[in-house]
Length: 63
Image 1 (cartoon, rainbow, N blue to C red):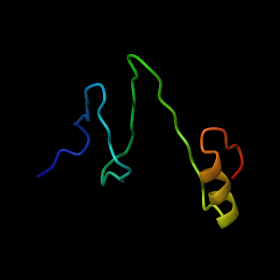
Image 2 (cartoon, one colour; image 1 turned 180 degrees about the vertical axis):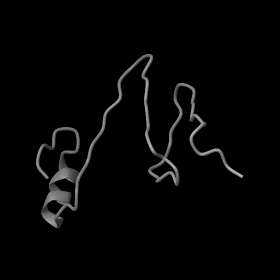
Image 3 (cartoon, rainbow, N blue to C red; image 1 turned 45 degrees about the horizontal axis):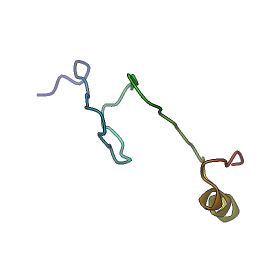
Image 4 (tube, helix red, strand yellow; image 1 turned 90 degrees about the horizontal axis):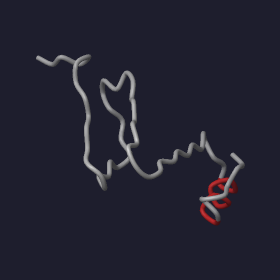
């Protein structure tokens, strides 16, 4: 038995979650109390786009 709509994922500062897919991850809310958070997304990158991102992943705006 699993109550898939009534759970929360919490972590303390410095926690790291490796890339994954939640089986029942209907929504995700992230609250940053201190510091910074960033997101990146490459939808089906070509080999050239992936190489460009690897060269400068903090400033890449293509893809």
